[in-house]
Length: 463
Image (tube, rainbow, N blue to C red; front, side, top):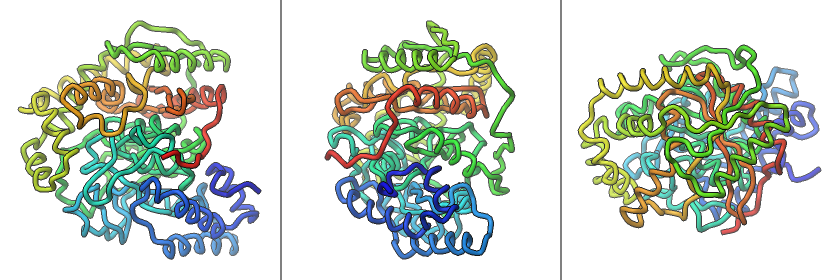
């Protein structure tokens, strides 16, 4: 058998349930891979081998006695450090929270345990999960295994780096402005930001978080196959009473025509030629798979949606956030907050929510005609690492390029990033968007795009 850590989550769970591989063997393989490559990457910043092996032993014991095990039985999964995992610090990349130890699991973590997953380690993020780059003053710098000179993405940069390098078969991340989708894009894997309300969330360890309301932030999976995203979504989205915004909507919606709107240059993004080529190629893959692909000149507003999403994210309580970042002293967090001040402060919540309703209706109308939208993830290939801190022009360049990622959460829509290939050794991919709670349409289109190219597989770091 090939190295266990190379298998997809679906393949490994099947082998474990059939007793061809034990959960202990899978955990040992995951730990060995972590030990082998994580020193080069710093993707996982907290892990306890004894805890990992104890989790695996429980899975093996359940299988031995014939008890029901979940769809992720024995599959090693990583968890981002900004959500609660019992007994671990919920640092969110902050020195100030190094001793904030969770007493209970966040619902998404609890759901992964219920599905039989073995929690392998905690992955890095930028301070307060603010940036599309991953470094902080408590855990340090995370590297992209594809190329050490480019960002691994953020804020779930540790998650993207880990799963691309074979540390775990699935990675948990969170996304308010691309924080699952961009690390997937940058690291050459796939990532799903589910609809708002699809996956329950609650962090008891942080009753007074030093950030805004994050009303559009959701947890989501990163993986090397679209099917692994599908089974991860099913596991993560089990109900939990602690989240009052949880929506018990079926994972499969009514049948829709296999029709895709393809937009190469949404709302003045002006992407680089390599990004345009990737989107056009994905359109051809969909056509070959039997989808109707119609090129459109533009989408409903992304720019206004992105601007207001930024205000909701960073404008509410801006002065308090800035004061906290100054106490922490993190250069990246300070650069982010100072760089957006003019566009988010002062903040008018009523106005923001009013425009949100209007823009959401426009997008809902769009998806009545087109079940799926195909467009760029970013206007550029993955950035040189820490480009946003270089100068004001570079900061503006980064925020402009990320327009498609920032806007989609404003309407609570699902967004799927599918890695489509490499430009040299730099990853590129596309974003698929559908109506609210229609992750199934994104995943169906994503599987067609994936099938038309070279499958993503774990790599040895090139750092």
